[in-house]
Length: 142
Image 1: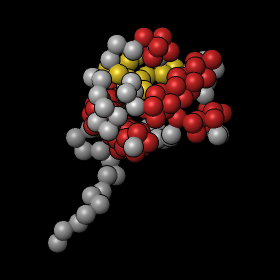
Image 2 (image 1 turned 90 degrees about the vertical axis):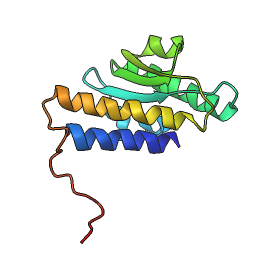
Image 3 (image 1 turned 120 degrees about the horizontal axis):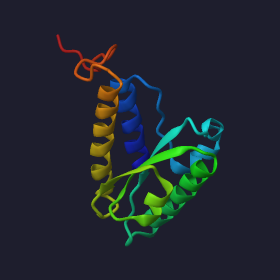
Image 4 (image 1 turned 120 degrees about the vertical axis):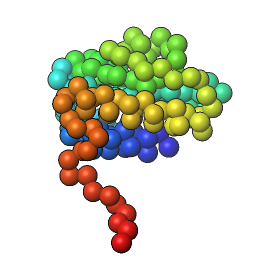
C-alpha cells in the first residue's frame, strides 16, 4: 500500500512540478535505479512504521537500509516519517513528521505531505500549479 502512495507522490511531482519522478518499493532501488544515486539526486522516502506490526517494522528496516545506501553514495533524502524518529532524522536532510498510527492508517497520513511537497516544489520552481501544462481530465463528459 505504501508503493501506491509513493506512485501517487511521484505522479503529483510530474503533474505539478514538471520533473521526472518514480515511485518504487524500497527494495527496488538497487535494481537499476541505484545507478542514478549521487550527490545530485534527492530521494523522497516513506519511512513510517507501526511498532505493533511486524511487517511494518520489516519494511521500516528495509527503508533504513535504503537510506543508508543513498547516504553512502552522496545522495540526499527527504523522508515522510513517523514523528520523533531519530534514526530517520540522522539519515535525511529533511523529515516531514506524521503522527504514529496503525499500519493501515499510515498511507492516509503519507499522501497529504507528498501532495503538499509537490505543490510547494512546483511553486518554488515557477510552475503554474493551478493550471499544470498538458494535464487532461481522464473522464470527459459530454
